Amino acid sequence: MSDADHDGETIVLDYLPHGRADDDRPGYQKPPIAFVLDTKTFALSELTLTDDSGIKIGDYVDLDASLEGVETVRSIGYDDLSGGARSELEYVIEDLIEEEEDRFVTFYNDAQPITLRLHQLNLLPGIGKKLRNSILDERKREPFGSFEELDDRVSGLHNPQSILADRILEELRENELKYRLFVREE
Image 1 (tube, rainbow, N blue to C red):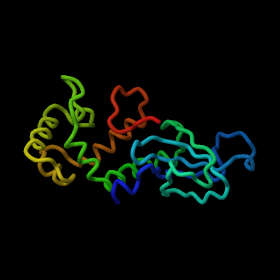
Image 2: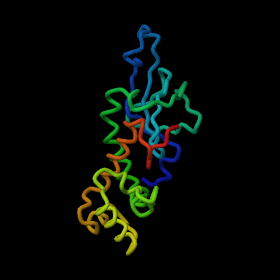
Image 3: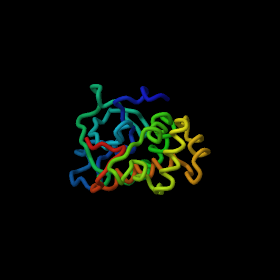
Image 4: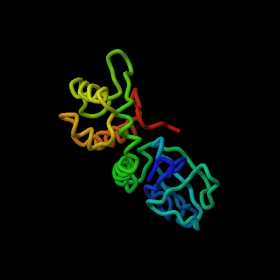
């Protein structure tokens, strides 16, 4: 899938046909809800749905289009997700990184200094000064074309896509991070 396949789209992480468990209203009054992740900004949202929405886990939903079956869209944080959505989140992020490899390899090619002492690459888990300098030296010679190439050319950098997934999850979980590379809060 190319980047264009998911423009303005979210992916459904979890679907609760009987609403939230912490909703005290009687079951017949609780609307179905879905938890979604924006494929570009990694923002999280909760959708209140109609009974006949037809939305299910794994569906791509374009929130920019007028959607039948979606009554409301509410931005939420990681702590507001259901247990099912939390457990699905890591797999969905890993799949997105794999599907859109060019987009994420470009991050390694284009990452810039944030301050005189801090580089965007240093915000990735496990990347210190030595590994950062290895990445910078290699990309000066020639930009990286794939994760495999990154892995092969930079000694000590193992599974670069997993490093990105870990950073994205950290940005979703931690409200007080000073710098965000991938998650934009809506």
